[in-house]
Each structure stands twice: as C-alpha cells, then as structure tokens.
Image (cartoon, rainbow, N blue to C red; front, side, top):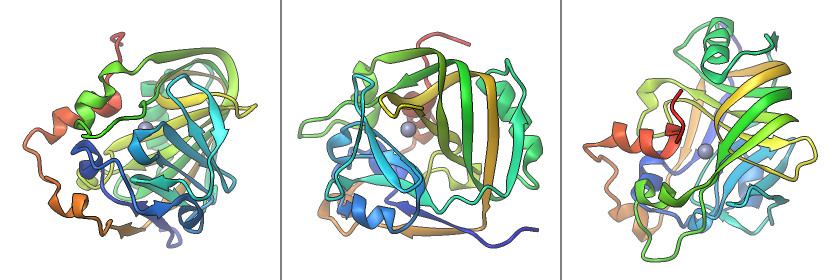
Length: 243
Ligand SMILES: [Zn+2]
C-alpha cells in the first residue's frame, strides 16, 4: 500500500500516566531517531515538539525555547517525516471537523501516521504540563493546575501523531498534536484549533520501534490501570470549555 516507515517511541503513555516522569534517554539520542516528533521532558517540565531536527521545549507559561541536547525525556515519539500525502485544509474547520477530513486522506486507519499542519489558524487552544516535584503524582493529578492558552490569528505548525486505538496504553490513541508558532516563541499541547489557511501533510508508518526504560521506577510501575480510558481523557483531551 505504501512504503515501510518507522516511528520510534521512548517509554509508554501508561508509564507517564503512572508518574514515571524521569527518563534515561537524552534529546541528543532522540534526535538520532527522527527529525520530527513530540513528547515531554524530565519532571514533566513542559511539552516537546521536534521540527526539522530541532527540539523545542514549551513551558507552562506558553514560552518556547530550544532544548539542550543533554536534557532527558521520559516519553517521546519521533520519526523522520516524509510528507507522502498532502492536502489543503479547508478554511474554518475546527479540530474535530479537520480530523474527519484527514481520516479521508488516509489510505487505511490501521496504520500510524505522523501529521503536520502548517499555516495560519484562526484559533489555537493549548495546555502545557508544568514541572513536578518528587514524590511525583500520577499524571491525572499533575495536569490539574494547567492553564489553557488561547492563540488568535496565529501562524505556526501543529505536529504530532495519529495512532490507532489498538495502541492504547503504548501511545495516545487518536490524534496527539502539539503547536508552536512561526517565530518559535510560544506553543503547547493542542486541545482545539480552527484552520484559516493551512496545509495538511501525512507520513504513513508501518513499523514501531519501542524503547522501554531500564530504570527501577519503570520496572515497578503499574502499566495496566483499570481506568486507563478515563486517565487518557483527563490528561490528553479534556478541555475546560465544552465543545
Ligand atoms: Zn501532548
């Protein structure tokens, strides 16, 4: 159907949910696995977006900076982005509507896709995790104090991954995307957006390279919580305003 392509992942979403916020993988090692991606940093110190081989750290106040190569990540997903499928995003579509549009671009829902949406947006709503102190709380509690940021008429990139539901527990099922503005000064974990003038690029992937941490914390984590669905909803998709 399409050529083989690998997505690399460091650790598991369930480990992050269980409060495993310190990783063993450096940003330098991660960039060796791909020039595009997302994740978070040790201590849950902000959201990560990797674009064109540069890793950005998006902090709780919405500010962005280039991450140091020796910083570490407890959770990240990366790939060498090849835009094999591209389309103009219809103006005015909100996230759920654009998602349905992107579904139709995919030759099959049974593979993984890296997704990049470049252009201008009428609105982008983001949320960003804030640095946690030990003993680390589970992520459902750690995100309680997050502020939402609202960008208006902004140019930038929304980038991340569309992951089949069968990967629930490994990754974030559905669409997980982060935003950074064109000046690379601000961004976060995307909750919602409205397209103005943008291009959608998809990179289909058939292979998953999973790297599990060899840390004591990871080896002792509870990776099969009974309320996984509700934890994923609280940490990844919940918005304070209801749409
Ligand atoms: Zn995120």
